[in-house]
Length: 208
Image 1: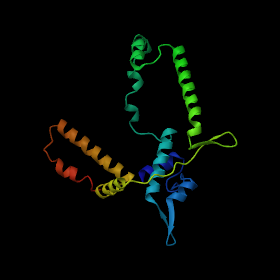
Image 2 (image 1 turned 90 degrees about the vertical axis):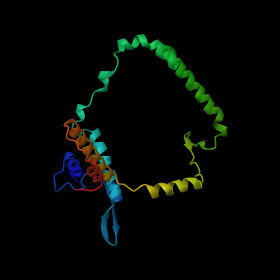
Image 3 (image 1 turned 180 degrees about the horizontal axis):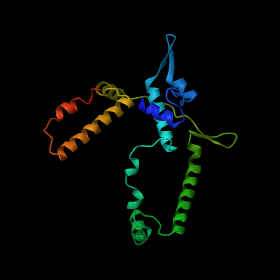
Image 4 (image 1 turned 180 degrees about the vertical axis):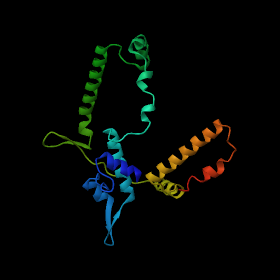
């Protein structure tokens, strides 16, 4: 719920008045359903909606992850271009790339022409691709293949042995694991670890 509140505030909605205000009408049609005359919320669709909104808000910088700026900048660990130039010829030899820009462009052009000619030659044999009256390529729908019995048995075995988890439960459990891992490392560094991890790990599935 705290995550939903942050999303609502980030999108300009005040607490107590923002509930689902950031959800579009199409999402509401998926999230809510009517059963026995009562409106109910579909939890899985809510989770997908929330994490989709989180991804969009992170991309637009409306949301931020605390401490994320503390990670190292990978660009600071790249070799300067002056140090790369002496290694360029040997690298091109190993990966099979042309050594000059002109040769590189010529190779790409040649490969594109070869691929285009191969596609044209194989078009009469391609039953999945047709050209309509407007000259547009149309890819036909591939007919569904029969599901083998082994795949059905594997799916049934996985469903039987793997408990169903929601995204929110998985995030909560991950947070608990990280919390106990940090606590264990701190105790070991302080010389206070007495081997009493069993009760801590055993309590991961118990919510406060």
